Image (cartoon, rainbow, N blue to C red; front, side):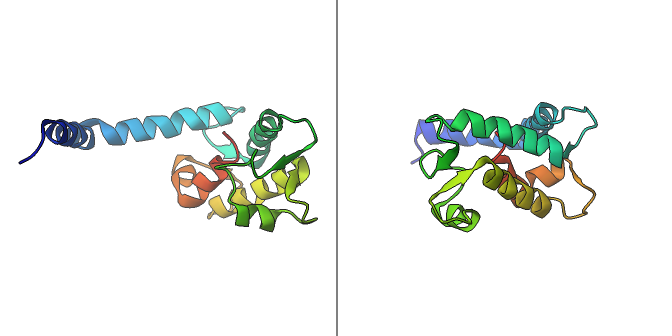
Length: 135
């Protein structure tokens, strides 16, 4: 027997998928682009991505030691990704090291190599990995 909660959940999800979910997802991607797109051209370029990443670095770097450690990078980089991005192997990333990771992820998210990311590219797996470093 199906519980009332399961039935309500199923109906809600079914309705969202049938009517509004794609529009909500697209709207969210467009709002994200608007937030990052400081020149209002409808795309995000590397300079805009680095500007957002730099601002996030400053917000995350609460202890004001000039670096981010694994605690400060939680949910943005895995321990393995941190180790790969840490050229001096001190367990932290300076802002320059952090921005180098942003550059690498930007390049991975830009398969057409046009130097900009549109909503579709930001929604890709590589785009989502980049976004974790920007917002």
